Length: 270
Image (cartoon, rainbow, N blue to C red; front, side, top):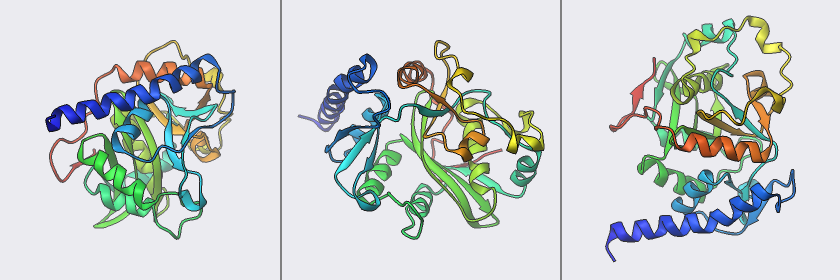
């Protein structure tokens, strides 16, 4: 078997593994609001990528993300949809203080997110290896935020078609992770920060994260944030039921890829 044939076989095996899990999620065999769906399969890049495409993501269930590996499908799911990003005037002003790039230093962003000094850390050496491999294949991407030549914020995640799954973000200066999210939304959703029409009061606006705010029947691009924390809700994240999320995901996967950099060294975001 050639290398190409072996790779194709591994991708098929991964899809065959997750397909019945997705069906169980859709037809209700996995109880509503049960988030940990599968326990055990180790990290492999093909299995990870296929999991995202079927509505799951990996995170270890042991201390600080250690094994056994869990495969999760939160219900409800946190998402940001096209036109949903909330940008205050003060955040736009902060954005002008930084330089933003895409895929310029994926490893540095991943390692910053994995900093063992962070509370709630869960990114292990196995996770780092799997996502670095996905980045080399063009499936995992990073957004970097710089103050002069210092990396002060960023995020990373996995992309497929019109879908992006945000995995983790960090900041070392105020608003740096928010600026990374603005750039990501511009790239993935087509929501440029300078076109957002939110006043300073948007930071404290009524954002109940209701699933009623979305229309699952309408296909479009999708930014998955896993859980809609209060911080992410203040930026426009909403919650959707699991079945609605899976339908939104299926539509997003059919859309063209976002314009990720194709050369080494990444690209500036403007």
